[in-house]
Image (cartoon, rainbow, N blue to C red; front, side, top):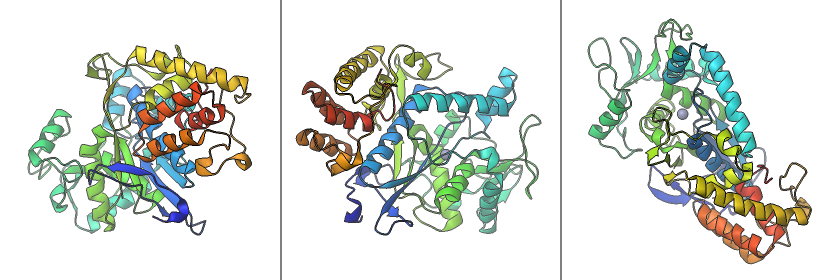
Amino acid sequence: MSPASGCTIRVFDSLSRQVIPLPLSEDGGHPGGRTLKLYVCGVTPYDSGHMGHAFTFCAFDLLVRWAEASGVRVRYVQNVTDVDDPLFERARRDGVGWKELADREVGRLLEDMRALGWRPPDVMPRVSAEIPAILAAVDRLVERGFAYQTDALYYAAGRYPDYGGLSHLSRRSMLRKLRDEGLLGEVGPGAKRDPLDFPLWRRSAPDEPSWPSRYGEGRPGWHIECSAMSMRYLGDQVDVHGGGRDLCFSHHESERAQSESLTGCVPFSRAWMHTGMVRYRGHKMSKSLGNLVVVPEALARVPAAALRLYLVAHRYRRDWSFRWEGLVGAARLIAEAAELLRRRGALDPGGRVRPFDAAKAGGRRGAPQEAAPDLVARFSAAMDDDLDTPRAVRALRAAVRRADAAGAGWMLRILCGEAALT
Ligand code: ZN
């Protein structure tokens, strides 16, 4: 890493299972500068508003904000999987068009994330608008001999020797997971050759969208969609590819295999970051279990910055349980911080922390000169250490207790982004 970037962030990479320096690329437009090329797997828009999604996107927003505070330019791509089985199944069940359902749910997601103060991704490609790029990726895999056609066009997972290496799963565990998720499919002469193979292109049901291709009318498989969009907007290699840990296998495992197969560029991603699962009342939050807490439900009770702080106060890669008492605790700290900042005129009329005058910034990570240096150092060390947010929040708490409005405001701009404190 170039010292010119001044970036000392370290992150946990799921592939090597180690904490490594945050990989950065040359910034083409700025000699000596560094860019973070970040791709995060977005939602299948049938069930947005989910606290698990909000947790994941807030975690990556923290990475974006902390990298930017560290002098790194960030190019952030987050896709929308609007061509996928769960969306079509939900549309069928509810008797609505898939496109209508997708538009409505994407609208809800954007509304929630705007309230939670994210710095929006630079590009949010939708699969339905990316079919030419996806088919081009499929063609390259076919030309290189990684695919075969039976009842669908499949990627031959056995052609990639390290299949399973990212998720660190044995063949038996991978098969069990596919079975549990209903993704095993048929094996036989007119279907898959190996149960680990997965579709690149498949026939659409009559009520599903379909596009012409040399493999017949149909639609793409899930995994190739992300590989193609990642390459289209960020090139053959990304610095960080992220998402919820439930995507590690089979989605990211498959993306990695086919991306490296088709470009020959290894590694496809220089780091893989996965966020933990959010539980509620003892189980993973899910609509089918009826234990879903959605963002608007929490926002009806507390200011947006309180929900945001409650989410990011949990370290991104650990599983945790949503508790209403925890949210109330975060709201208390936000109320104290808001009171302090209001007295100093540091809140705008919308209740957001005013941006700092860059000229007055003290230098390190853009913190204001008048912020207590020991707290700035504590906060920075915590964030550099694989986004250790529980420690960073303790530094924020100390700043509020000491009535260090400059320090607290600076920390809140990173932890809570543009979310309103009141
Ligand atoms: Zn993806």
